[in-house]
Image (cartoon, rainbow, N blue to C red; front, side):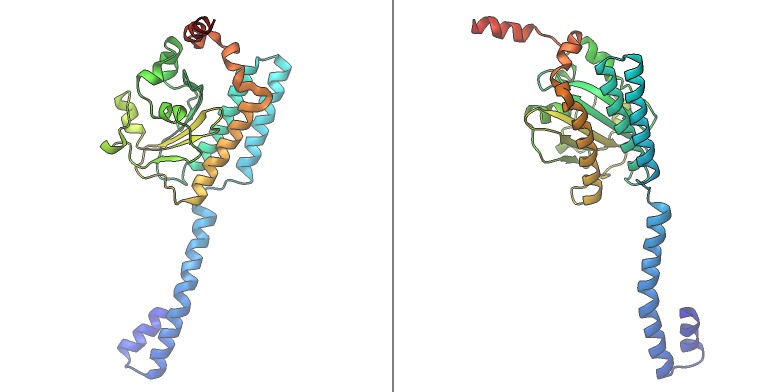
Length: 261
């Protein structure tokens, strides 16, 4: 209709009626068309977080708990599986919503000797390359200068957004060429300042995250809250050293106790 009116206005001569009609029609069609475009984008292009993904997430969570109870699986592996399931759910939602084709989600615990407790990425991997290095060296992440160790040492409730990890000002420490390709922007979120633990979400696209994007930041905080609930339930986070003593170097603490005596 708009094209016809413009054609009539130009090809068949100018008239006040046609001009007014064209202006009114354009004033109506433009906002309606814009709303229609937004509606189509919201329904068909943006990823749906509910209800199917939430249902699958909840079902998987129940299955993990039931199988653990039936098999007598140890607490450490059960909590790790529950949190990995949360990271998987978050990755599915972020993919297609946030810029990037590859996402990595990590949960770090322990302020003194950081441990990568749970991991999930867009390749469906649940084990990071650095996990084996950390098993051999409790100070691995500290020695390599991982960004998350800075957050664990000086915890804050404010998310830290690195829009471009390749920017020299960011001083981001890459441990491999592959990591440099895959981690181009990150969000680091301290889950609790009194018991420092952190969620790290990374994308292979620069400027994938922004403090001003309220929906994305709220979703990341929601993911962090789910993770933290599993960590503090039954005071699990404070039992990890006892459950996996071989992953930590207790010598420094023993020396401190001897000094105190």
